[in-house]
Image 1 (cartoon, rainbow, N blue to C red):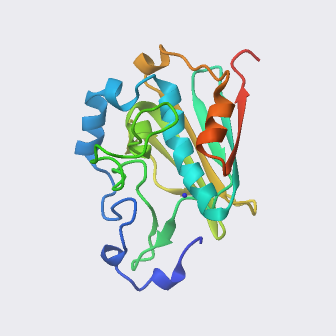
Image 2: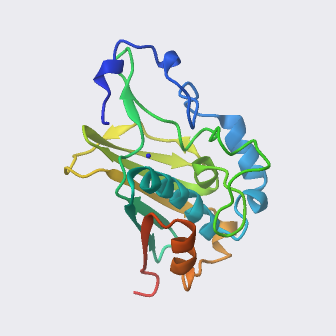
Length: 216
């Protein structure tokens, strides 16, 4: 989470190295359906666990860069967002001149999803990846700013419902993920009180702030 890598224009997408996600898997419908069958397993504790899944990627980025900032916003309508100042989700141009974003929302994270002994999030539950957030949300909008471009895309239960749309870049980089958890998860509620200290201990390289607008 280098802008368009023009050096890749003559290289087949199939040759791109899969580090966190499979570049050839635009949408893994079976994977998304599997998550949706067990929301109690993939989002224990409700929306806050989904926030932690997103924050974990920002923390990875901050750790690799020696520090970073992130803002979590809680909205009155029940949606939440996580905005970071990282490099933005890897987005490339393939051999056909098509812009391709790493399928972080609609396919499994190869590092975590199929492994029992995986990283634990600050709530003590296993990290499974961003696809959990997308699959268990009525809608999710992923806005991605890199040095050479910016794009946005909307998902519903993890399935893209818009193309990857170019947006005006403002010279900054980072990722903004705003999502609306499914109704059963929203009934759990989100308590932001006392969370910052726990997050700072878990991810010391990431400066996290929380903006709770629910009672504004």
